[in-house]
Length: 252
Ligand code: ADP
Ligand code: MG
Ligand code: MG
Image (cartoon, rainbow, N blue to C red; front, side, top):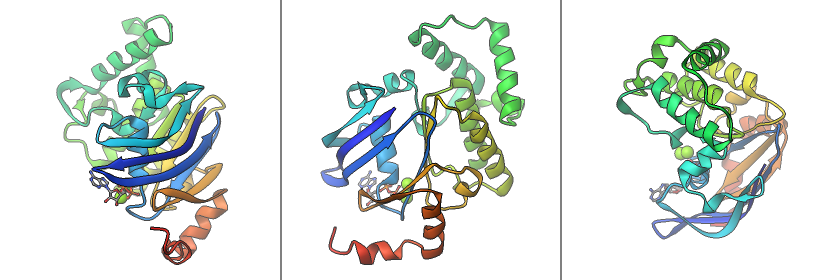
C-alpha cells in the first residue's frame, strides 16, 4: 500500500529526514516511535505534502502511484488520511457539513454514487455510535473551541466517515486523558480491517497498550534505526531513548 524508499527531506535548507525506508501493507498497523526532534512529525508532514518541506531524494508510492507528485487534496482523495491535513479550525462551517463535502469529493473520485441526505444522516449516526462520538460535537463549527481530547476524538470520527485506505496519526495519545485514550483506541481498533492500514506516530508506549501494532519502528535523527514487533515498544518503555544517543553517536 505505502512504500517509502530512501526518503530525504529538508526544512529551511536543513536535512531532517535522512533516508527513510518503510513498507506498509494493507491490514497492518505500524507504530513509529522515537525521541523528540527525531523527525516523526516531519515524516507525517512530508507524506501530507506540506509545502515547507523539500524532498531532496527518494520515492513514496501509494498503491503504485507516486504520492509525491500529488497535491495534498489529491492525496486525501486517493485515500490517505492525515489528521492535520484537514483545516484546523473553520468558523461557521460545521463539522458535519465539512465531512459531507469531503465525503462527496471522495465518492466522486472513487466513482461511487452520492449519498442522499437520508443515507448520509444514517451513516453519520452509525459512525457516531461506532466511535462513541457525541452528536453535539458533530454539529459544532469545525474544531472550534475543541479541547485536545475532543479534537482527537473528532479525528477518529472523521476516519470513520471517510474510510481512508491509509491513516497516519501523529501523537494521537498526547493530551488525552485515559477515557479519551480508550475511546480513540477503541475507535481505531473497530476501524482496522484487512483493507486499510494505520501508521501511528507516538512518543509514548501508552497508546500501544490499547492499539496493538504489527510492527514498531524507532525513528532517530531522521532515520529508522530499528524495526521490530510490539516487544520493541515494551523494550523502549523500559530502556527509554538514551541508548540511541550512545549507539548512534557520531551519526549526526
Ligand atoms: P518529532 O516529531 O520527532 O519530535 P520533528 O519532525 O517535529 O520531530 O522535528 C525534527 C527536526 O526538525 C527537529 O530538529 C526540529 O527542530 C526541526 N524542525 C521541525 N520543524 C521545523 C521548522 N519549521 N523549521 C526548522 N526546523 C524545524
Ligand atoms: Mg516533537
Ligand atoms: Mg512530533
